[in-house]
Amino acid sequence: MNVSPPTMSPNAQNNMDIRVSYEHSLASAPDEFIANVASQVVTNIPANMPRVLLPEFIANLIVKRSPAIGKIRNLRILG
Image (cartoon, rainbow, N blue to C red; front, side):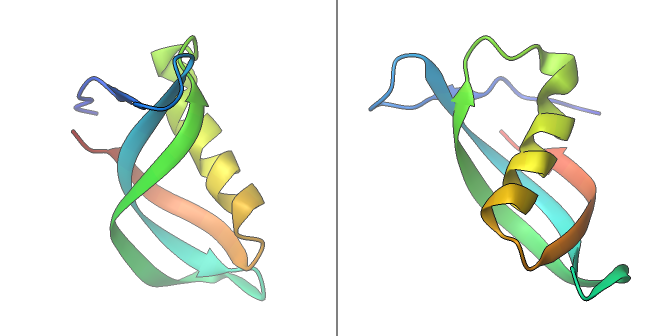
């Protein structure tokens, strides 16, 4: 995975904003991937988060913030 450095949020010294793209399904049909999100900024990611854990952390954060989402696949961290 080609990962660009995350950008620091201008309003929070200890958090990052990271732009991602992904595909997702709905919670009512978790195996049917129906949406392709070309670009979304995910905010309030701890700046001390190890890079290896970023994809899983971001996917969990997206699902937590949007309960209608079932599963996320092909998550890519954009520059």
